[in-house]
Length: 252
Image (cartoon, rainbow, N blue to C red; front, side):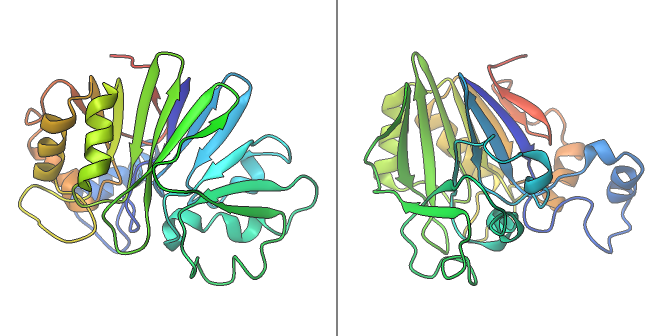
């Protein structure tokens, strides 16, 4: 199993539009440091799955037939905007696995094109050849799923967007003995807003779930600046994600 982080930013991204701070200026001068919409690519044997579809170049990067499906965490625009162009293609349908959300996003349901939306039942495992996927509820402003991926002895969780974890989801993750947890960390520790974790939230979850390794994603501008100023503040088992990062297998 191989998990690559395609994007690690929140909805605003980094550099922040209109911001002239030294951090954003540095990112503009070093485009490899930018943060694009939060998403990932999961590869298991010959199977390839996208986790969220916020990248806007999906039709260019993934030719027809090259994806076995897309797992959506939820229907906020920064997690689905890549689907609006992809849907008008031709050829093989693409299965898009989603939380149960009657609203969806804009007209995606009404004009789905080659996208086939499939609602998942919370906490019911779904099998894709040798890959088992358990969708779990998360705490967000729209119906949102986190995913536990199990392949042979590998167990990896992908959890964004969320503020803390619902009790049942947290117990499943705690009992799973995770090798890797990729989790929403949008805000610096002194910023407490609904819908997304701050660093203190993540540290509490890590203490409870006890994954071998944790990677922060869905990172906002202010947290990025804070992390630069407090580069030695994270435990060794917690790393800051970046666009293009190979999250799993674990490489230190």
